[in-house]
Length: 222
Image (cartoon, rainbow, N blue to C red; front, top):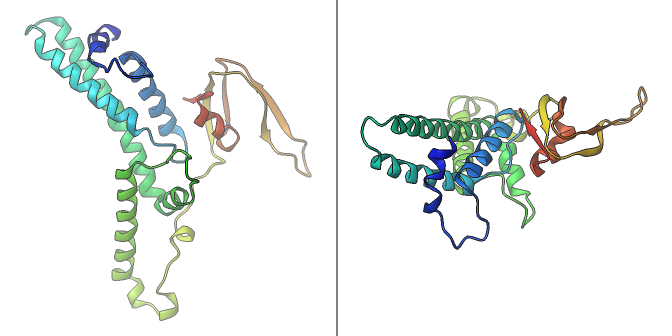
């Protein structure tokens, strides 16, 4: 749907240092969506990208109003808008589901983040995670903990809630050649297992081994 997207290219800010075409922006959204959908842990937030996509959708809606009623382009344009909205909604929903599932670990990871490192949560997600934690603790105290002996009336959320399983297996496609990727560390029973990853090759690997490559964009989860 590059034609439908290219109609909106003039709506961008010519003064931006990093110029990205609408088609490239949607491509970035789809990459972030697939990575977030298939990774076992919460990835770095892409709130700026999401805001740009929403702005792009507004431009597309405006262009759609200028198309004559009954024109086939209107139907094609509308389908593309709906598709982009679905991808963006699914991306955000995947992040919220992970926050709800791993909320104490997500908050701990965000709090321990070194200043200057990319944030894993947007301000809105951080507020949601804190509120979810507070509501969960309040609920547990109201329905269970207050009825238990004093020495059992506290709960460590970091221990009570399971961590993301980084040893789960994921499918990936290689975007940049990588050499000497450690797949399995050396143990008493086996030697270390190292592989090279060629561009466009596809693999099924343990997520922990390629997590940094997902963050850098060298591989794409599929």
